[in-house]
Image (cartoon, rainbow, N blue to C red; front, side, top):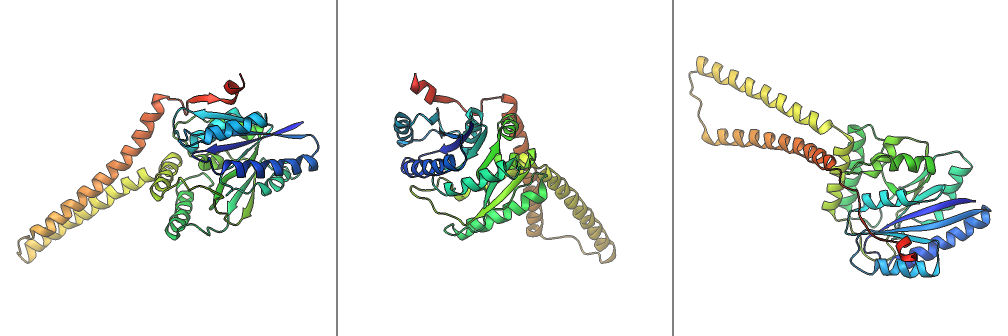
Length: 317
């Protein structure tokens, strides 16, 4: 009997979880009829929620022993939740998806068919529209995907969701990467494996509010760029070379002007602007180096990616 582990990161999703559970169990029932011998488990990862998310999951556990959960001691972030879910998944196949219903459970049969019948290691989803999202967020999201694909070797598809099904071999490969600063979309692309992409139109949340502000998404993008590319360090180097060349040409210009025209160099305001420009570029380059040093510092601490406060196994006991 094949087992599919459905991994669901949750942060303050008390309102959405009942809708999600009803939809995923309905899809699971149809899949069990289509593929005899198929079973499911639903692994919810409570990422330090401050509402009744954990209590809602526990109530589902009481009536359905296929429901399992891991509850964090605090909010460690979605990347840690995805890692915890894949690490604790028992299935022959693992599915990662959100609880807000923006990842339609109805796509799961097609995704499973791609892995079972078409021989893919993974079937992933990508949005072809961003209807309902703020225009500025959509604009910067598209620019980010284009930029990171140029700067890194990881294949990150524009509009890619975390909603995908993976074989056990692929799950084990992801879990084996124990880096503290995680960017799962980049990890998916870095490890390779054959992936089929399934497109769908954007679906709005069924309940609750998004936890991703513009600045959180910006920080997440920076994590991806720093985690999978050293191009920013090269940019800092080229900034230094260009500014040195400009300064050298400026010195030659001043000397020639003095010798030929005899006009002394003057202009405090222009000098101050140049000094501020050079200082700003220096600080920018130092900031890039500092980001890489900070990530290295955090990795050397070897802190756990997450800390579990409670699990369904404790609950069962």
